[in-house]
Image (cartoon, rainbow, N blue to C red; front, side, top):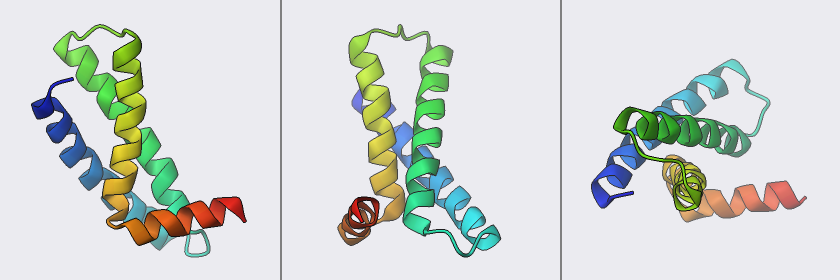
Length: 95
């Protein structure tokens, strides 16, 4: 994965994930927004990166599969905008 591809996927993925998270928060008010952002970012990150790989003809080897998973994590952190939210989510998952 090149830096340009990473930045493109990260920017688009974070934007889409944030918008979908806000829409789900409006529909379901009693669900934690951090958990929604996590699930949403994993779906958007994995599907978006896989689609980009397929459209660009990039092969699926071990390093590219690891990049797909790391992209989902990056989009999750980027869509939550801030380290405090990440810490809060980890504490919610633990407890």
